[in-house]
Amino acid sequence: MKITIRKDDTGRFEAYVPKKDLEEHVVDSEHPTLWGGWIELGNGWRFEMPEMAADTPLPLTLDARRTSTGE
Image (cartoon, one colour):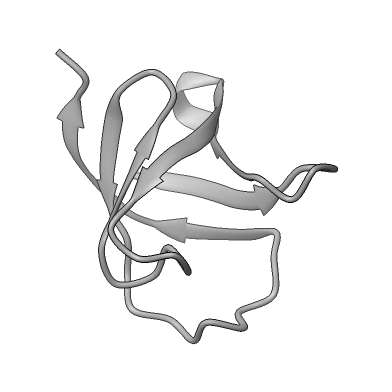
């Protein structure tokens, strides 16, 4: 699933899922840099993130696999 990762004005990570017109903060992650593990959004969805360098510039649109619907 395509998602866009960016940082908001306060420095928190946000994810936008265009197919669902969903924008949520990242509330938890396996790794502090987000890359190479899972992230969890405010609505409970979890995504497996690809491996990337810690200093990858944002915003960035990428393919991530949704592993949970938050239910």
